[in-house]
Length: 608
Image (cartoon, rainbow, N blue to C red; front, side):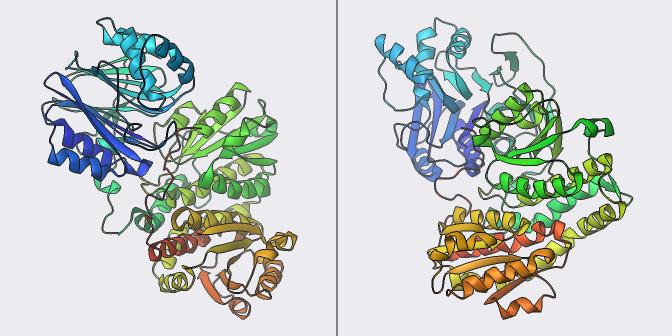
């Protein structure tokens, strides 16, 4: 969440900054601002609300200048307002800062600075940095930055400009993503690559405790103590168009329809000869498996739901106890972690703060850490012992879709590889799963080619105030993700219930016309789930069933049926989530919701 964009060069800075911030809107924000050096003075414009407000203001009242920084803010300290928006200035107006992250000791520093006579205008932790830099400034802004960094605690990606240093931007990184774009006669800083792709495909990815002095014709990289460093240039290979809507009305719909390609890209490079699995650079040996005692899967939100599916197939075939934990709770419990533990961290962005903290704790305790992420060079990818990338491509919509399906596939491939090393899976079972996996892209395409039924069901239920999702086994796990999708983008109260638990309370909430989405894709649990469907039907529920093709019997018990292609139980979560994603999309569309940027949510949650 939050976006940083910086520019220095020969061109007018303001349109470049705003255009870059537009490419970062997917990160979630509630205000936007820019600071531009114009004739020796830094002009700041910032407003609560959409970036379009800032854009219009700058168009109507242009700011000249060839250097500046911009920011889209998601509120953490202080409510969304003009004054709390970034950038923030020092009291003399010469130093301006944009910041992603949280300064944990800002109150202590704030009180100290107030005792020196500094006055604060905002409620943010970021304003402390601007005043602290002014306090330490003695003619050398770089030295002031070093001293300030030693003083502050917490997470930060910083962009800094100083009116007396019109030829440089300063970028500083700790626990919040920051990149430097390498141009010709111009250079950039940003919190994510899409912001600079129009201008360059060459970037430096800053690591923790690194900083960059960015001038229009040069970039100097160093540790935050001033020690010079060299880094390899990262060449971006995906197209700018991949981050555009491509004719779809919303990014979310585009990304739902991109799932067959994302599935192919994640699966096919790792499958060969029908039964062999190639796990990139991951080398889980037979010797390692002999000593492995437990597995943790740690993640947040949608990635956590993918982890629940992973647990099922890991325990089913690897035969090792697997615990799935929410990353924000993980560090505050009592995890059983040692050198015989594998911790799998799952994160679309690779920057999720709680997941990153769980990763670091696991490594401190001696565990092997394996990351499943979509972003090459992300913090989680760099700090893990092993990385398995989901080749889903850029995911812009806040509500995750193709990241979820590819995370499930990555976990499935990992489980099959580990089960093979552990000699705990029958050869014919492995062959069967892999064969079914290879057909998944075409199975998902079948669903996407016939969405009229899903759209018509959405028309019947979009006015509802509350809905319930039920299922057993991994159907329940998928139900949780389906329910999350609906509440994320439609703002309808939605709850997922293990179908066997209905009688322990939730049946009291079922009344005439209440929509209940029932997943019945698990052959071995079909009869049990059917009994639960009859329970809610007897109380007036309007039941929408998700079932495998050929199951005509379900039509006797459900009001509507959405069929998915017939696949083995183990991999039903991929085809069964697709109609639930579409159902959520159409319901939200009919309710007039801002589908790609739902209220109060952000794409990459980089604060705890």
